[in-house]
Length: 290
Image (cartoon, rainbow, N blue to C red; front, side, top):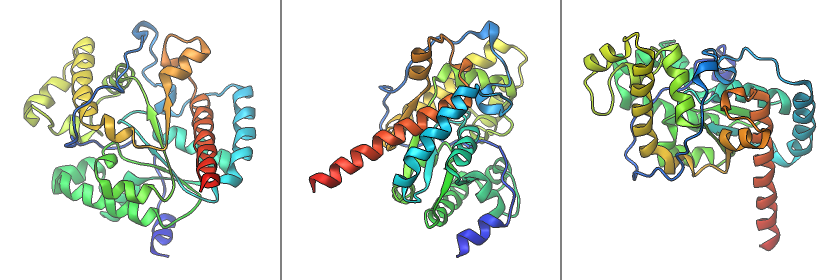
């Protein structure tokens, strides 16, 4: 099979999704504000960096839960959707290991298909439309496979045809507060985020490049948050189409944390499995009705 041959032909990386501004009805009903303790923020966020040590009990519970639900997945792929920097790659790798699935980042798939050029280079040399077409092609090929956890690009949700591909599996939205995302991205820079580093909604590329090169941490955070808010307003309803939603705000509240950056990727992956389990139960319930 063509897709399987391509998947086997390259190494996966941990680069996390590119971005575009979609044209969806504006809505902020899913946008939640949550306290983020910037005085104790770790720039190498546990979720995105992958440098973490999960609590032993979380790992045991994760493995147990994965063994419970894996038979009911019937080999279907799991597609992780969400904003840039939401941790889809890190959480996706944990889920794939727990479920004995393989893992792939759809952006990495596209990079391989375009001769190894990075997503940022593809945006620069070929334009956003070209990248989105390649992204759709990648999702179509991946939808023919089984037993994969797929980390999608942040803008993959804006095309209905992409949802048609993902509906062959189970989609999971990693819903991270925008303040936390803005802090992560401001800390590590925007070089690998095409929509933030090569222009985007409302500003010419030259001005955006100047603003993001500023060494004023607070200014970078506010500016990043503004652009993320604009992107989210255009995509929020599309993310909500996912079969399951993992809210980091809700996980933090259950654990008594005031800062979502205290959550381990394993805890987030466990919540994802629990949400998937809930979706599977609803699915079985609908099947009994009919």
